[in-house]
Image 1: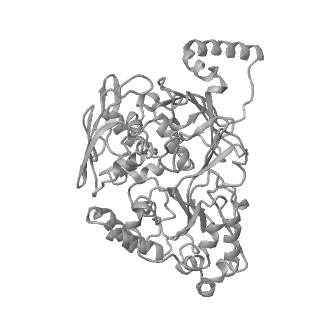
Image 2: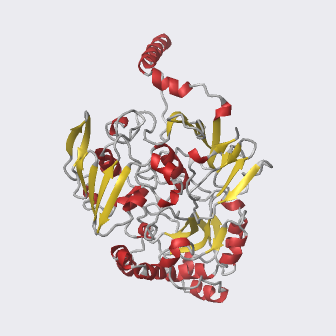
Image 3: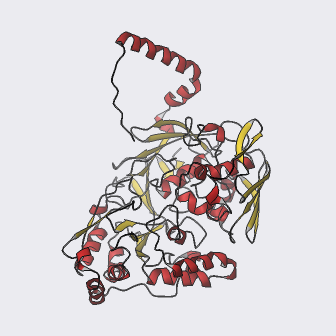
Length: 539
């Protein structure tokens, strides 16, 4: 955010008259918006959900929006592109799903929209809205997690440079026909062409990072919403307190057993009727809180390396760091028992098992770790305290992080975990840091989803290992997915043994709710999102 200083150079009376006139004009032309901002709500009808200790605007495009925040908000407000199997309550999920059906054969997918699905502004959603939504960020050269979902589309990398054609549909002017990978047939049918087989595209595109949005609700550059996000989900945004990070949602239709108002808040304080992401020790402490550990693995955690640094690119350094860790002991120190020891990208859980490497979890070996570390140029680490930026709440108050530091100290490696800076989500150009502590969520049915972040990603540029063998294995895993799990198993083994990322543990989402107001959280799909309409308040 840029802070600007203003120097008053006009008479005070003239300023006051100008301000008054402007206010009258604004009120006259924005009655509905003002009503939305200042609507009176009975507090008994509002359920507050404390999403995170990191203050965030839940509809931001940048990489600092955490997965559970992005998916929870997007599912509620924007709805879902396709029905994801793990939503469990299929009937309710189908109510806010845009696609009637889709068929994928080889490197092509055809999708058909439902008729009569409407944005909150009243107009029907069309296939041109899908095309615009997919291309909006590439058009403005904005790259975030959406890029890793779209990068298999033919010609996607040329979006911002190709000729832009425009088409007017139902009075709305769209940029269309820009890339060869997307072909809108009519308002209800759209075809996608991929560089390689991509049977998981719709699952990934329904995660919430690429919401289907109406073009007319954006400014002329497609960057900023004119007011609030507009979708076709069960809830619409009616107010936003950007200073205190409080965002109020109202259900679109009067449906029984669905909360009328939801207020999303972000606070380190122990407040909120529902509290998400309780892996830290500061929240969920009320005697009225009931804690739930979701059974699904929600994310992994560990060390990501800056491959453009001499230390991060050194394979012996990464091996030493991995061998220094007693993963079982670290996981046992989790606050709620939500962690399991791990060193592979894919968890030993559910359908993921089939795609894992058939190797045991790395055991701690202090002697071998010291040997590998000693082979690393001493000026890079010896007699130094290595700073490790993080994207992890309350990092230095966690017992298992203290244990990680102690274990690394045993091999002579002194580290300092830095408290999270939400604006620092990846290594920067000429970054002096070699290690980053973070993790990747398991939100997709695609076993290659998280490996893709390390393959020439437009997001993680300096995290790319520039490893020809890894690139070959990744391409084979994605290209021959329909042939079975063998290629992904080989990719998993290479990724793990070469410590492209040193994974320490997997973690599950911990959520609590105040039993005085909330009866249950209903049927929830996983720990990566919260279906707000499933929350059940006491009568």
